[in-house]
Amino acid sequence: ILTSGRTQKEIQYELQEQREHYKHKTKSLTVEQLEKLTRIVWENIEDDGRYCMIALMLYAGVRPAEGRALTWGDIVPFVDHPDQWILNLYRIRDREGTLKQDMKTPNAFRRIPVHCELMVLLKKRREFVLKANAGKDIFSFPVCCLGNDFETPCRDFEVCQLTDKIFASGLKIKREDMYIYMLEAEVEKMSEHEGCADKDQQLTLYVLRRAFWTWCESLT
Image 1 (tube, rainbow, N blue to C red):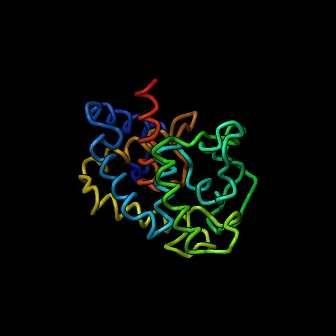
Image 2 (image 1 turned 90 degrees about the vertical axis):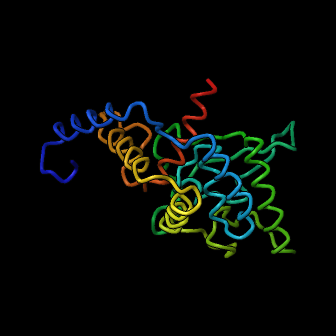
């Protein structure tokens, strides 16, 4: 459809037709898949900082560029509840790894209370980072790094490589499901509002953020 040479309006119409055909199918990860993914993150979060990126997308809806810009100093406690944390999101890291104070929209500058399950995962990683860097100030260390290269932020394609591997071998997601996810992403990208989907966002990362949105929607 996307390479057919048709007009954007024609492509959009056909994508909507396909979407209607699969409307009975789930548009996000299932509860079982989310539980399995959480176990995978828990088991590997001390081995690779990229698992923090997965956790941030799942539990906070953080965009990839935002998560890669996050440092341990950007995670702060509530003033009146020091045992609870807040994520300060105010910059991004582009594909080349450069920090920019250039968020997607004005509303993207935000402070997010850390969900209790995300808190457990981040605390486990933070304690590991502190132990491995005894005597060092980890304030400026990126939360999401490649492996345990603690002071070097991971790049966008390195996060994609990990999520692709997890979707294929860890979650064993069917090809048909991936087609439906791609269909949803393309419909969103071509909508006049260009809602949740970032134009250049890789598919598995889109699905992770959509899982967060589906979870929020189901609770509200």
